[in-house]
Image (cartoon, rainbow, N blue to C red; front, side, top):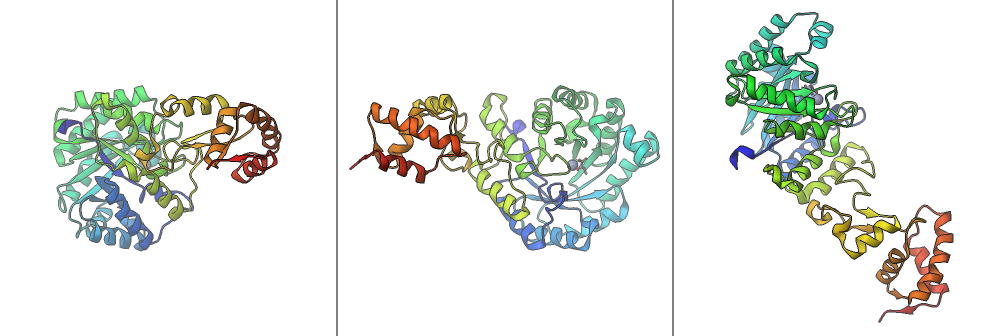
Amino acid sequence: MADNRIFIFDTTLRDGEQVPGCKLNANEKIELALKLEELGVDILEAGFPISSPGDFKSVQEIANVIKNATVCALTRAVQKDIEVAAEAIKNAKRARIHTGIGVSDYHIKGKFNSNREDILKRAVQCIKWARNYTDDIEFFGEDSGRADNEYLARVIEAVIAAGATTVNIPDTTGYCLPHQYGEKIAYLANNVPNIDKAVISCHCHNDLGLATANSIAGIMNGARQIECTINGLGERAGNTALEEVVMIIRQHSSLGFYTNINAKMLNPMSRLVSDTMRMPVQPNKAIVGANAFSHSSGIHQDGFLKDALNYEIINPEEVGAEMSKIVLTARSGRSALAHRFSKLGYQFDRNGIDVLYERFLKVADQKKEVVEEDLHKLAKEYQPVPVQ
Ligand code: KIV
Ligand code: ZN
């Protein structure tokens, strides 16, 4: 089983914090870092220390308080960045430097005005600089998603030979289809001669809504680390959502993978990140959205009330969410109405429910949701028989 452990690399505090409006102060970062450690993340990307004195300080403070997770700092392939990152994480129990450079022709030409051979040399050089400070070095080949696989394989072989112990293959622009990303990982797993000396990591962006699918395709083809964020926060359309990959791995046990994440903390963690970063979670967000365990149409409600498994693949308790909800709207049916009445202590026979259902529909057509107060009113007008 050891081979099938998927390392969870959380980048909420780095890629997630790059989102406009999500900026955190040092205390907020420390609070989130401690909670992420409790959640069970394996690697915690604390920030990009050269980017500002404030970020340097918060990375340093996180490195001082985190005990179990590896604390990681991001750098460009620039000597000064690496020196500053190493200084920020020097007190960490486990420290990782995450360094790298763009490897697609778009980045090589359009960003660096360079050529493939020069970029390969710079990739190797940054690993050599990082080796002066730690043995735990992760290389990222930015825009690997659009990079030529043969060239990418040469870069990856060279950085592993230079000392990289994790190789991150980011789909920086969220461009790949799941089968393409999976094939890219398989290509590296099969064509880089020294690949057994490093862990392959997926870092997928969500520009086409495929980040989670691509990360899963990555691990199915040889990757053993997923880089992700709580609530899928991150640049532009965001990163892979931690809660999604963790629950896919748990739900599909036939894949044979496992993580160290405490799933019961997923919903509380999502709320904490959302409140601290002042970024609301969309209601229909998988696992942690307000509607993830709500049932509102008559057909679904009836089936759910007969057996929750008819309409729920996850027990909300397993992910620390509130109990499943039966929401009353104009699309709800009689069984949902009777269920909600009985929860409030009212019982009606079939005929009573028929009459009340007609009245309920009139209220429901005027409101988005019929709430407890409306139900009490309907029941009282009907002369209810309270349950003893
Ligand atoms: O998306 C990306 O390529 C990144 C790298 C810096 C790892 O965030
Ligand atoms: Zn990214």
